[in-house]
Amino acid sequence: MYYFTMLEEVLLTSKPKDKIEKFYKFYKLFLDNKLIFDDNYKALSLKEPSYSSFLEIIKPTALPPIKNFKTIEGKKYLVHTILHIEYSAIDLALDAALRFHNLPLKYYQDWLEVAEDEIRHFLMLEELLTELGGTYGDFPVHKNLFEAMEQTPDFLRRMAAVPRYLEANGLDQNPKIMEKLNSNKDEFNVRFIEVLKVILEEEVSHVKKGDFWFKYECERLNLEPESTYLEIIEEVFPGSTSRKMDLNFIARKEAGFSCNELKKLSKKEDCN
Image 1: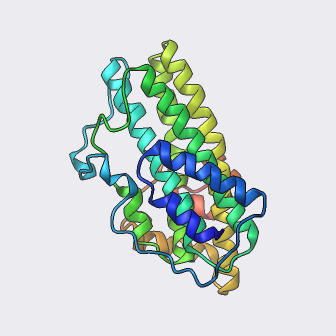
Image 2 (image 1 turned 135 degrees about the vertical axis):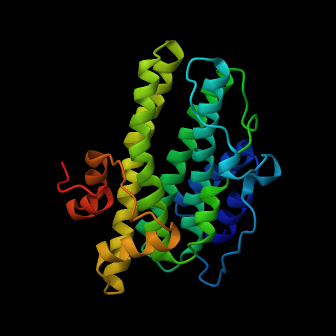
Image 3 (image 1 turned 90 degrees about the vertical axis):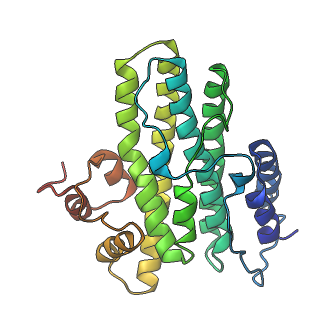
């Protein structure tokens, strides 16, 4: 059985239950060293996200703001929003493990570990949504993460833009959501916060993996990492380097960001 062909089938699978079942079958074969890496495989060009068949996709600007954490409907919408990010992140991890060839085995191990984490995050959030009487698909969604994947078909840009930018932004936003939930504390929000704590801790390791492989590729290409990173994220996300970012310094340092990078992104004079 061929690694890339089998993983492609997992990535293209639309419905969460089917995708997750296929992933675990694939992942067991991978861990048991029963898959063959076919270097002749050519990664397909994705035109639509895997979830386009069952979710209503709209522009991010058309989505309502997340603001009410007290009502059932407000809780549903918040959980659904994060749930969709995690489902999109499953595909991002799978695509990273599929699209780039001739890398050390550790690279593929890393991104399949990330995919497994994202699946677990998705299932924890889905359980919370079910408890509220909701299901995935109750609200429209955006495809920002898919579009970032489309814009980064090359390895260096992908490692910079996805784990080191998009996932790193999650490290900044997660504690803010927990703070708001904590200010509206009830039994459900307490459990929700516990799930978000797990996600935050594990997302640090995802960003750290991206940091390692981004710097690996910079070294291979003889590029200076910090200036290369800023250049790439400005190309992929225009305006990202000029705005003042409110960063989670502790989590980002743990994930591999330098003090100099944090100062440039936050427009602060120190990185404490």
